Amino acid sequence: MRLFASDLTCVRGGREVFAGLGFAVAQGEALVVTGRNGAGKSSLLRMIAGHVRVASGRLDIEGGDPDLTAAEQSHYLGHLDALKPSLSVSENLQFWVRYLGGGGIPQETALRVVGLDGLSDLPAAYLSAGQRRRLSLARLLAVKRPIWLLDEPTSALDAAGQARLAELMQGHLRTGGLIVAATHGPLGLEAAKELRLGEPNTQ
Image 1 (cartoon, rainbow, N blue to C red):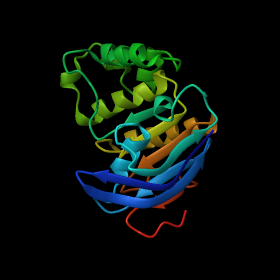
Image 2: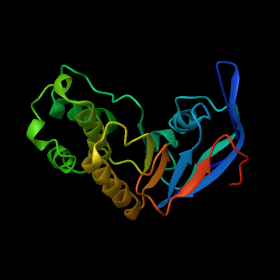
Image 3: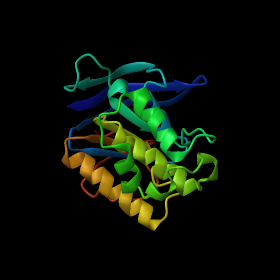
């Protein structure tokens, strides 16, 4: 599998966010997207996820399921954790498994891996910001998709949570997954490619 873009342009609210953007990232690889605030990091991830229209250029995928788009083969983890406060931790994860199709590790195992196994019956409204982010990470494990689109994934995570996230990302890459992550800080992916927005594109 290979995700690639050429001469990509993003326009939002009548403003050109970026133009002439190109990159390529293959299975087993990570692309770390950096740059100043407003350079288009989140917009790029949302474009790959199908939430922002491609103004011009090409964004495509080679390999994977030929009947599915890149967006349909992606997990998008944005700034906000998509949780229903009134549902329990396990019910929230169960919703996503049913909605997105599952195929990953068992839900109970996913909650244990992210350190939420003792909170499965707790309503999500009572979770801390870091615990909500951990629950979102559990979705990546319980629903199998080859492309992870991670927007500031370490947000709200403590040191232990960031270390666990690094392990999960490395494991995803080892099994042939692909990661595109927007970040202002280190992610523990030393071998990752870097795409810096707001500067001349050298990809």
